[in-house]
Amino acid sequence: AEGVDDSWMASLKPIFKYFEARTPETLTEVQEHTITWHYCDAADEFADVQAVALQSHLVKVSGNAPVEVGLDMKRVEVRPYGVSKGAAISRILEQLSARWRLEQRVESEERLARLTEEPGERLSRRSGSLSPDDDPFGRPPRAQEPASGRHASSTSPRCGGGAG
Image (cartoon, rainbow, N blue to C red):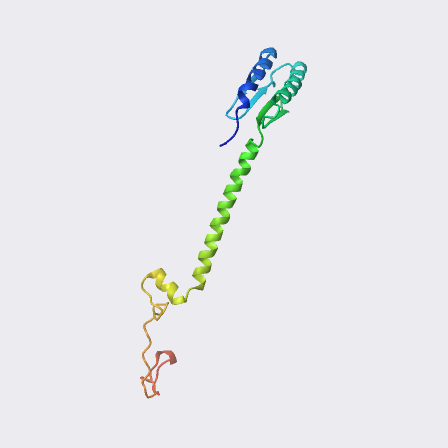
């Protein structure tokens, strides 16, 4: 995590090492932003007493450092406030959710823009060949009616043909 204050680690690491040295079958693990003392392989009663003592001592000496001291699952861990796998996953999910919401909004706006265009504009923009006056189904233009008002032919394909 960026901007995490790890200055406390140097002063607490020797305490972990002290408890590791005096408690057989224990291990101190130092990671980027955490220090953990594992005692799962140690003799139960003695290790449990040592774990409580370590936790208590760490709480006292960490003072005002921005850290959490935890004791669970056969380990004692010190880490900065808000730094955990759960917190990291939450931040990742928040970022993914924000990205998804943005993509959905953009898609909705694009759909709305397509729906509000004139039909002829929409077709000519997609195919690049139709104009607003072209038939969207590719039918040829209709014959113009004569100025006198009569049909140009009495054999109209629409009406089944025949003499009129």
